[in-house]
Amino acid sequence: MGSAIALRDDFDGPALRQFAKGTRDAAQARRLLALAEIYDGGSRTDAARIGGVTLQIVRDWVVRFNEHAFAGLLNGKAPGNRPKLNDDQRQALAKIVERGPIPARAMVENG
Image (tube, rainbow, N blue to C red; front, top):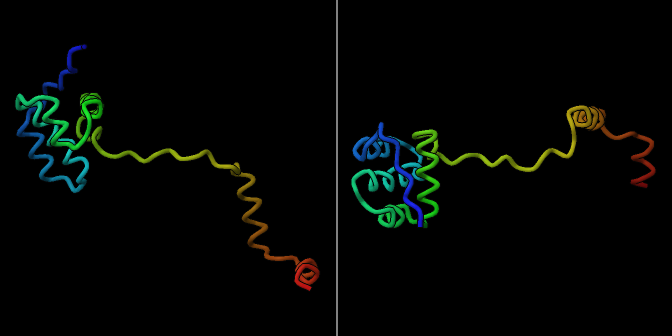
C-alpha cells in the first residue's frame, strides 16, 4: 500500500475550521472539517467518517484541495451533453417558431 498524499503546508486545522464556519456551502464545510481532522493529526479513516465518505473520496478531496485550495472543495457543475443543434441551426429554429404556423398548412392539418 502506498503512502498518503500530504496536505499542502500553507493551511492548518484551525484555518480550515474557520473557513468552514463562514461558508454557505454545506458540502464544502463538510469536506473542510474532514481535512481539518487530518491536519490535526487524525487518521484518513477518521476524516472519512467525519465526511461520511470512503477513503478514496478523502484522497480525491486532498488532491483537489492541494491543487485549488478552498475552491477545489466546491461542487462543480457537470458539463452535460453536447448541444444537438449548432448556433446557426438554433437561430433558424427560433425564426421558424417566431413566425408562427403557416395558415394554409394549419387549416389542412387541423381540418
